[in-house]
Image 1 (cartoon, rainbow, N blue to C red):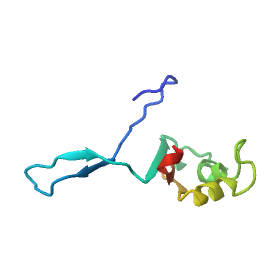
Image 2 (spheres, one colour; image 1 turned 60 degrees about the horizontal axis):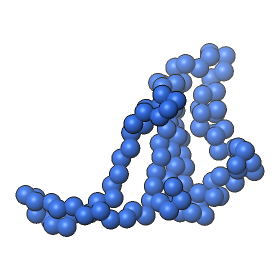
Image 3 (cartoon, rainbow, N blue to C red; image 1 turned 90 degrees about the vertical axis):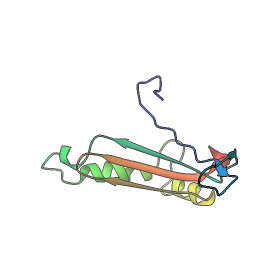
Image 4 (tube, helix red, strand yellow; image 1 turned 180 degrees about the vertical axis):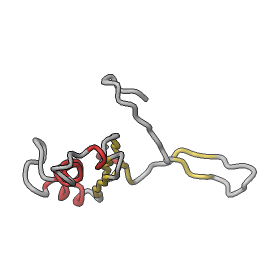
Length: 109
């Protein structure tokens, strides 16, 4: 889907369960899922960093995201919220992209 701000999103759902193990026929029925996950990837990585600030993208794009925000201002408050609700978060930066992801109990999404 494309959001109103132009951001393109890929939605994937795995809330189906096979009713039959037959390879020829797999009737699916909708079930509930216990986890939900989000991954945001932007096309900016370490190759775009200024030479005088090595690894700044890794710091800002991954570590700084976890250091507090308006909704979770205290250090580690966001991670504590995710942990309390069966979730976790992580991030990574490579040469061309930075990705941030989290998962949490599905009823919170």
